[in-house]
Length: 531
Ligand code: GLN
Image (cartoon, rainbow, N blue to C red; front, side):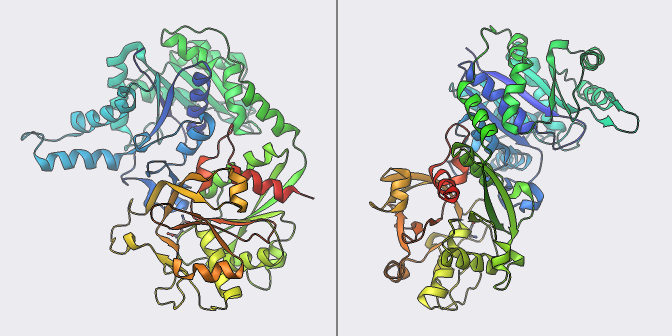
């Protein structure tokens, strides 16, 4: 069958959860046997979100092929198990860069370059790239931002043209918001009507409307919206607040969202898939009442900054029949005096990734405390580097040990800049990015956890363990148990005597999914839950 295109736009306000909805649609179509992919088109000028502060844009998610992307790609992978690539994340900046580079080469043969058609054509070309590969039946494209934004106008024009060109092979889904006004005791559909009018004024008629709401919407409201927005009533569904984002696909299926999409695209509807493993996961989630408390030692005090780590821990908890309670501990506030108090009640501690000086001393103090108190500890990327520095300072006796990132003049650079990073001056997209092989030492803790000799994990860093110190670490009890077979870079350290003290230079959280939780997180939670 020719590839089908689904466009997901959002109206009224941002943060309605377009990523979760797009992932849920992907999941439901996949359950019907279709091959799907999901991509995000973001209307900002940055080439990718790699240079953005997490406070601006939450976590930066990294694909296998080394693209720094929007955190919604994490949802796509966690919900559907697909592996995204650099084609799945595109920004206005990348679109313009391609067009401008082409113009400089003279490819436009003297033409005046304009938003329409040149920018819109490039958007259309990129939207269709995955579909053209022949690997997918459905390509779901989520457009970032909110209808009416100046920035998203070229994207809207591109999807208007595509819907017109592709006919029933394309479908527009619009996610909007229905607020409940407490004082009036009323639900208001006017913002939705306005949002759809705005779309219509750009020539786009949504086929399906998804109404985000905090309060259940009764049939008359759905009818009213259908009537005012020219949408079939069975194509208006609601997305109420739910206890878990992982309920959303079930809720959407219950209301027939996937069936509505298939009907609109002239495809057979068939039986409703059972979603067995997904329901099993949810059942386990609701039956897991025993609590395991995990401290997240980091510097970004916002939920989205460590999104994939949070989700990987929650998933691993469910598979251990535990409810994971996550407690953020701001490393900037941790001192030798208060570390005990800051970490009381934690069954395990994750030392989070990050960049720059701020908050690192607190991470080092936390790593010392958990090492000397035998508390399960998982260091990820910068977190692993802090474990290594702490060990150098307090066990090897190098009190000035540091990373070159934090102190270029340190005489004990146990974490050093990677050779190939030394002459790099541009910040964007130049780190060690994407998936690399890693060989695991036989007999090590991680070898037993992965039950494999060779693994492959995603990276995002510039600094690395300094191999000059390896023998000293090994002799003192911190083992270098994972290495890159080509470059010999140390990717994992562990302390075998400790209950669970493992640092990974890579980011295992990126590849943990609902139906395939990551072994390191599974084992970390298992140990943290042990009584
Ligand atoms: N700042 C460290 C580096 O560049 C760690 C990066 C990270 O935690 N992702 O090596």
